[in-house]
Image: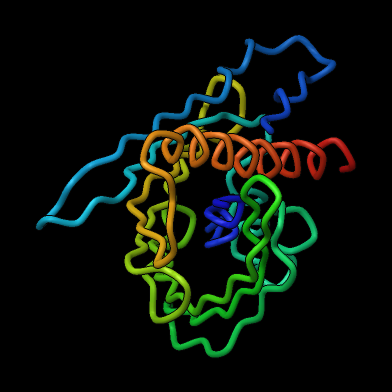
Length: 193
């Protein structure tokens, strides 16, 4: 169902971080929290996820802002296309699939990414299969390791049914899976260097 949430840039099963072969301080594990909240009478999910990679900040930035390559590693994202770019604002069209039990649903989104180079990316829904979507990616250099801490937060409300009791668990699983894939890709790119 929500496997497209990272697909939402990122709207994204957690694979453990790849440990570097050289002697470096141990990297923190992925931490994810998902809460169902109510704002102005509307129920939505508030998501926070943090992980650290050994990859330097410039490489992390390059990977996360290469939007048209996102479908290569973000689970359930079928395509991601830049529609326009104006300075630090990028309009992106994404297609993917949401899975829930035995059902699948095609997902189409248009989002606006506002980039603060080497620091953060803010994502806002323009149109598509969500009632509400906003997210924030923050990149923090880790001088002790030469790596980068990747922080993702967001609020989202699908415009289709999500079971209340299971919804937060489903969203959490999808965010863990998405962040795990993104962090693994960032580590793999560093290893291939």
